[in-house]
Image (cartoon, rainbow, N blue to C red; front, side, top):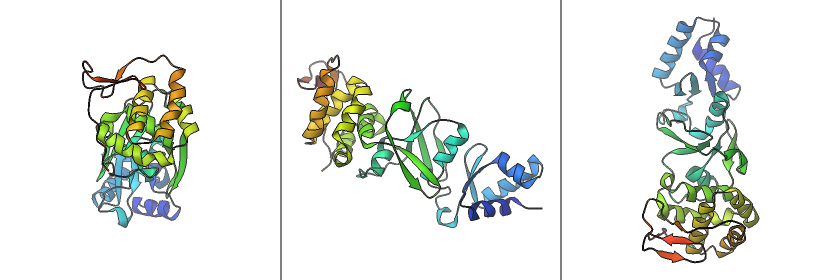
Length: 261
């Protein structure tokens, strides 16, 4: 009778590095307690890890020190297991598009509803909720274990402005925008901006001018001309009373933004 160690060896030989407890029980034909005991021993040896209850990853030797697979090696399979749509977002998406000035400490994933983050060895995954994420433009990248969905450069630009507290706040957002800009298509940015909250578009326009990406900023002028625009604070967490007003973007400049150069 095959053991759990045999089972994960077979998985690896077929290019698979994820499995569920139920799949292991079915494959091994043993009792639930017996299979769980074998899986527990494999986990203690560092041969598998559990990023989510009932969902396991095989940890090849090159990742034993990390104590888990890299997040992009198992997120597509985990989200499929959970039956939830997703895409890689914010600083993690920006890094895929070449804006990796400062590598994110967590792997950021957009989902439709709030979900607790997870830790697996040295890997941390942060879930961010956006109810209308189904309409976000995404690109697909091949990874060793499958295909990863990633927010497009244009969508990433708007979302890092929309979630600055998840992205190191505005100094870092501006730094990332300066690096991300060369990957952003102006027409795609305008299309994405038309479905984004208008305050995101206003703040993004201001920051694009700040980092001297005027051609992209110009694309947002036409978008705002179609919308009802009111003055918004550049930093939503600060008061805007007494702050200088930027007439073009209708932004109250209530903080200094200093991108890294």
